[in-house]
Length: 135
Image 1 (tube, rainbow, N blue to C red):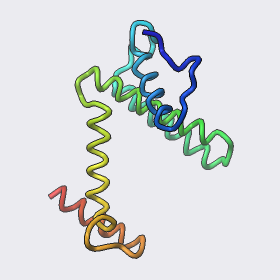
Image 2 (cartoon, rainbow, N blue to C red):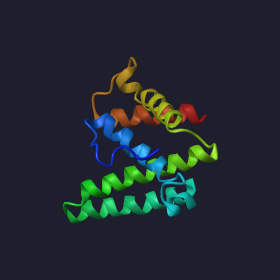
Image 3 (cartoon, rainbow, N blue to C red):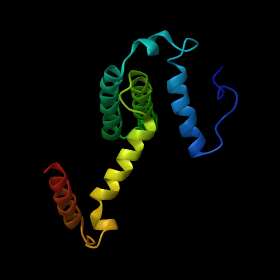
Image 4 (cartoon, one colour):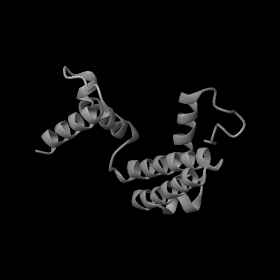
């Protein structure tokens, strides 16, 4: 099956995200890229760190590459998850669900009874929940 977004551009943010994860998965298929197929999730995690540094450099330099570097960081994460899915480590859905649950839980100062009025209170509340979770 060919990659569908060569001539058809995504219509919105959600479709753009789907197109990007589908690209990461497609590149690992026999019709895709030999280099991408050779990488495992750990190698993509290393590439992500390198792309993250390039994004930080773009911030420091104040240049127009920031958007591109952000996109590269996002893609390396999606390439990592495509490999991780093949390896049976986790899926994109399971990782997103776990992150969503964690972020809601850690933002008890937003979603719970004790609202934070300042950034310092928010950090203290986050740290308290994190410490409770870690035991």
